[in-house]
Length: 326
Image 1 (cartoon, rainbow, N blue to C red):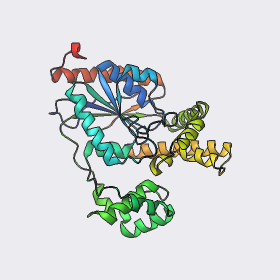
Image 2: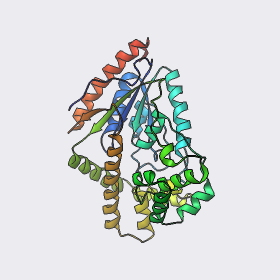
Image 3: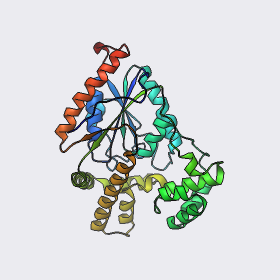
Image 4: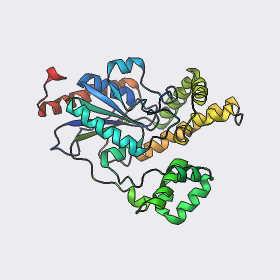
C-alpha cells in the first residue's frame, strides 16, 4: 500500500470533508465506514443508483450492520419509477453536508459516481430544468442517431459521451434545445467550494484483481436474489428510464422479457460492470490532488483507515473539537 501525505484544497477551511472515491467493488465503502466509525463521521453516498428505494441487491447498498454502525445519507430517497436528476441530488447533498457539519460531525463521502462528485465539489452550471416530454421523445430514438445529432451541434460534448450513453446524450441535447450554452460550456470545471477542507482518497487495485472482484460481486448479487428484486420492482411500478438502464437491471429485464438467456444475461452484466468500473476510474483520474491508495488486499484498506482517522482527528483539533466530542 502506498499513501501520500494528505492535504486539502483550502488550508483555511475549518472543517474537513473526506471523499473516498473509486470504482465499484474497490472496497471504498469499507474504507468509508471504518473511517467514519473512528472519527464520529456520517456517510453521504455519492451514487446515482443508491437513491432508489428497493434497488438494494444490485447497487450493493449498506448492510444492516453498516447502517447500525454509522449514519448513512443519500440512500433510498425515491422509488425506481421516478427520475432523480443530478440537480435534485445536488440540492439534497449540499443541504445534507451543511447539516452534518452543523452537528460537528465529519462528512465522509462514499463516491461511486464521478460526475455527481465533480458537480458537488466544484459546482456546476445546472443548465435548464428537465423537460419530460422532450426526454421521452429523445429516448424513443436510437442512441447512435442521438450521438450523430450531438456531434453536429456540439462535437466537444459528443467526443466525451459514448454513442450508447442514452442518459447523457439526452441531457446534452436537452441543454442545447432549452439552454443558452452548449453542453461543453456547461460542463467546464469550476473552482472547488471553499467552505470545506476537501480531502480526497482513492482506492486503486491492479486491473485484473479489480475485475476479479467485480466478477465475484456480480455473481454474489445473482445468488442473493437480484432477479427477484427486479421482478418485484416491475410488479410495483417499474423503472424510470434512468433506473432501468442501470447495469445489471437492464440485462435482467431483457432476461425476463426473453431477449436473453440466463448465461448471456450473467455474462453481459459482468461485462457491463467491468466497463463501468473502467470508465469510472478513468474519470476519477482527472480529479486533482487525489491521494491514491494502491492496494492488493482488504487488510491494506483497513490499515489505511487507521491512518486517515488520525489525520482527520488532528484537523478536528484545529477546529476546536476534542477527542471527547468524537
